Image 1 (cartoon, rainbow, N blue to C red):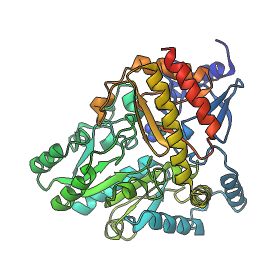
Image 2: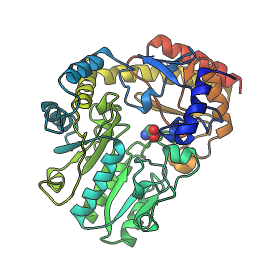
Image 3: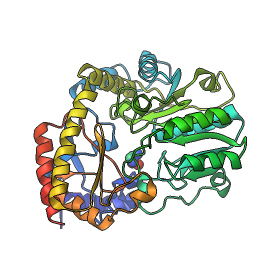
Image 4: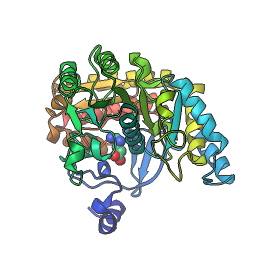
Length: 426
Ligand code: HOZ
């Protein structure tokens, strides 16, 4: 059907590979074309054809206060008036570092970067330098950005588009990456035994959120902590999605497990391009200019990004955002469970705080193979039935939904009614 979105997408496809600047936006998994956004405010987005949606993607995580919150906009405008980028240290970088170290006490020193990908990539280099080892353990379905060594059995867009192992990654890199099923501690122990003194790090999303959303089994994270310490490997948590979202101190606060290094992004940038990585001082001190590990960035610690992130994080604390998000999340869970039980379809709903996923599969789902049992055709139908009724969920079974503090109880009630109709229509 002719629309401004489809005209724009046709033009985009002529000049941008696949018409998108990141594959998760392409809507191919749901056999459709993306809509183009005119503007977004609070919990809503409006497309260029005038359609309004209640948005549960939230820019894939950063928009925890909803879109365009005035505190963040004001902070960015004030910072912009003082200059867009200096490439010289600015005071906001220090404020951000202090805040991240305070809220995530396992971080003693932190460096700002521009994306989650840069953060995980830098963690790996640091872990390899610190341990003098090359191999790493990751988990099937966990996604850590498009770092060469981590595009092995990965999640998110790569999984969605059925290419979890990317072309263009040298086999020599892949050979250094051991990818294991999540939640299987025995296989981790076996990998350590088989690769004695060769594993530099175990890297994971403590709450995997890139193959749908599932949770670590009781003690899984504590066992990883213990094994890493015993074997002289570093434990790295990728909290790009969960950091400052599931709790003030992220998943590491909830599960009470302190990693050696953490990778951060999304929420800490308030919607601007930001990542960060940090951890124990003795490890972080290996970074240039103090140490031998090189890592750099023209725009790292950019004043606008720091201002946006600081404003968002402080506002979250001021309004006790995590408590509000839990309340909204619980309401979402209730309306969703009501809709699911009425429809009598095999749907497994997972939620923690403001993150959720509806799998079109029966329980239990504790790893990638469980997530892959989902009925993808059913998911696509559900997605379109919701979109048509003004509710926008991520266009892939293998992504996670996000609630913001800007979602109102009425938005969530309305979403429940839409889900009920959508599930009944399948
Ligand atoms: N990391 C995001 C959630 N899976 C996706 C963002 C993207 O790849 O564009």
